[in-house]
Image (cartoon, rainbow, N blue to C red):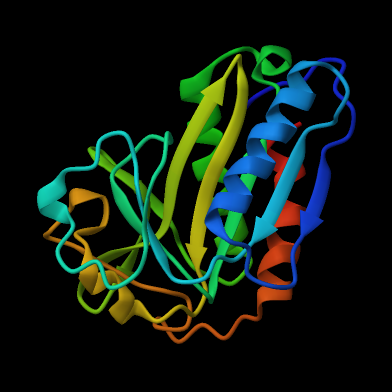
Length: 213
């Protein structure tokens, strides 16, 4: 668990309408610079995007099968993923220099944050060696319910994670999500778990302090 020193309380911002991807990246870059310059507090930004695909730094062109939505190149880690309505995206802007400057621990804690929040709804999320993200038992196998992809500039994080609440899962058909062919994606709704976006947001907020102290 990341331990903090001399950090102002993390701010939270929740958007009510989908945010364009280019606007979101510009916002994160500006906020990350403001945090590094000492004028802004850490921020957790909860948003949705209109339907789109993003390509991380490890994305392979063969995994872009049928780009029916806009495709954005991004500096985050990872491969191709989908974002769209019904998916809660948590963009996290933190000063890691004040949190031990440990990127591996930070990614681990992001995963633990998702796992802890999902437990609120009696959903058991798990890590898998060699497969990024959070996985759950689904339809006799397992599937990804949350994706993680981060970027760090001057030890300030941005980008973050996404959790599938009730997106249109057919939209994933245009890509091989995270380059993994053998396992699919799922959502809380697809698992029969009835959760609203405000309920998921509350679980994330309540779980945050258990991980990022």
